[in-house]
Every structure is written in structure tokens, then in C-alpha cells.
Image (tube, rainbow, N blue to C red):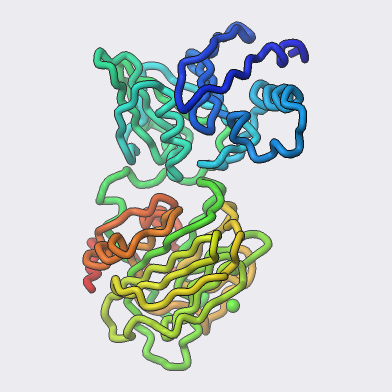
Length: 396
Ligand SMILES: [Ca+2]
């Protein structure tokens, strides 16, 4: 690939969506779309998504736009690795390969009508759980069906099915290759977990493995039924998320006085669910602009503050542990910090949910599926004899 070819690449930046130029490149013709912050090159069965020149953050480093264009073109054409960074733009491009006449079955998490295929790509990039998509390309109507999947064929062999007029798009070199999630219906999440004794044996683990982008905000919600009546056992983990260099990246601790940790900095909320042997709903949220945080118990907004790890971004290569507190990456448990009781409906979103949304979820434990971490993600991670029962019985 010559330098000359890179420079041939036209860089007309249009508004939000456009059908733009086509060009010949190693026997493949690509339509190039500048779509919001993304540049989408659409070939017959290959899509390359990268960031639009105008929306990249590193413009300041380059005074010469032509130089920037050449470098970006190089990345677009030659990069095969793909950082899973979205919805903001990543410097590296991501390549999706289509299988014609097929769809992935059983893992559709949302369905949309779109007019152009770039809209489907962008919807995937903006959906934290999207790992692949089914696109209808031969509809007789003007709009096409775009189905967002939470799995890939690689993760769920045998789930690819023939379907005329559709194409199945999967990332060429996916960052995430975790276990096949339960099919996207209620049955996969209608359960609760029991931690039968205070012991480092009992825990539940899910490895995020960069499945979705780093977090600048989140809401974490879960249902809890504490069986521990020993007042000495207050230093108990509720929820623990560690990354390789920070074992307290997110930690919710002590169900007699909930403490919230972000990257090892903590706030004592001076509130807690009643330890009365009943189910309680807890939500914590945080965002990095003001470092603001909130704590809700049973739908009530009981504590909040700001200046907690302002500007911090939560890494996406971490390990979620339920039932234990991590003193190293994925381990370092201590018996006195282990959880005794039941848990259900652990979900996480990549934004701050509203008080109304949280209130609604607190009225029924089957409401709400996280768009970043879902209760069903934990199904494959039970350790030591944590037991699962169905259906959920959590009531406020
Ligand atoms: Ca510890």
C-alpha cells in the first residue's frame, strides 16, 4: 500500500449522515460515510469503523491536517486490532465481517428500523452490550431492520441460522470472547443466588474483558437479603470490581453503613438497608464530571455527594466479584469480609439513572436489565457451592 494511495483518500466531512464517495481499494469497493463521530467504510461484506477526522481528540497534536489525514488513513486501512472503545471515537478502527443470508439467533437485545446501514453500525457502537448485529439489506420497504446482538457466533457456536435478505456482522478480531450468554429472554435472569456461610469459598465472578467501553459514569443496582445478624460482621463486601492495578476500582462495602469506593477513595453514606431478613434494593451511581454520587435504598434517595474521583475513568478490563472483597485482582479474599445471605438482580448501566427509574425498579426485582453488566452475566461464574434458585422471590 503506497503512501500515494493513502493521500488519494478524500476527506470531505459531511454532516450527520451521508452517502458519500466510493473508491477502489484492493479489489473491494467501499462506500464511505461520515456519520456523526464515526467514519464508516462499507464494502460488500466488510465494514471498517473508525473515527471521523473532525471528532478526534488528538487534533491538537497536529497542526497540519493533511498529515493527520494520512495517519488516520493508514490506521483505517492497515489496523486489524480493535480497541473496544465507544461511544467516543477510538484511534484504531474496528473491522466487521458479514456472513450473507444469515442471522445470529436468540441473542437480539434490541431491534431498530434504519434507513442506511451506517445507522445500524452506529447503534451497535453506542450499545455497550452489542457484540454483533443482524442487518436486513433486501427489504422492499424503505427502512431496514437492524438487530443488535449481545453475543457472537464464536461465543455461541450453532446459533447462526439461515435467513434470506439478512447479513450477520461480527467483529473480525473481537476483544471479548467470553462464554455464550443465556438467550436474551426472561428465563436467563429469573434466579437468585444464596451464599450459605461466611467463607472465602463462596463467590460469584464475571470477567468483563473489555466487553464494553471504559466508564465515565455508572449506576449499579442489586437486591440483597442479609442473613448475617452478628454485629461484628459489618465489614462485609456487597459488590467488588477490581482492575489489574486497582483492586478497589468500585467497591460497595458494609451493609450496616454502606460505603462506596471509586478507585480506592471512599465515601461513608451513613445509611444502610434494614438488616431485617427481608429483601432490599440498593442502587449507587457516580459520574466523573463533578464526581457526584448517590445512594438509593428501596427507591429512596438517602445519600449523595460530589468530588469523588472527579475525572477518573473506570477501566474496562476488570473482574466483578459478588460475595467477597478483593485484595488482589480476582482474589485475596478474607473470611470476615464474606457475604452471608442472598443476592439477586445485580445490574449496571453506563449512565446515571434517574430517581424515577430507580424507584420503578425498586418495586419489582424483575424490572430493569443493565446495559453494561446484567444479572444473567453471573450465571456461568458460581464458585464453591453458591446455589441458584428460580424464580426470583425478592419483594420490597
Ligand atoms: Ca480485604
